Image 1 (tube, one colour):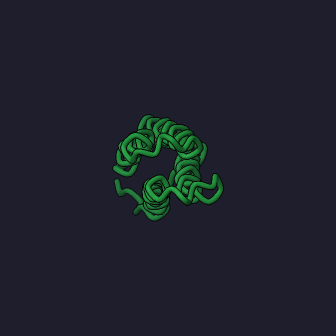
Image 2 (image 1 turned 90 degrees about the vertical axis):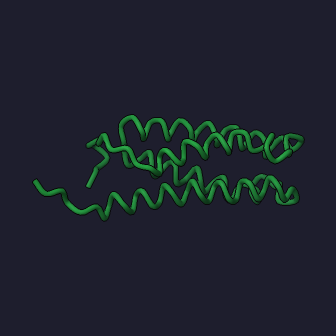
Length: 122
């Protein structure tokens, strides 16, 4: 089990997937055509950049806190339409709900995998 103080060099498929999802989040306002909504666009750019940076960090040297932070950022993206008041824009809300849920779910799954990993035998 990896602890906060002991980094590992494992590369998890979830981190690679979140790296690709970060690009989708970052460009979601242009893909979904909701660039006219400033709050949704700014949120997508900031969250996309954050998930990208966290994924790169996790791929470099894994730390548990990176996954917890990714879980929090993904959860924020999923609930942000209600906090930033853009639920009336169905496309932005849909993109952010789905992409945020995927990012948070992958981070949670990776934390679960780490906690339930069978001890390696020598």
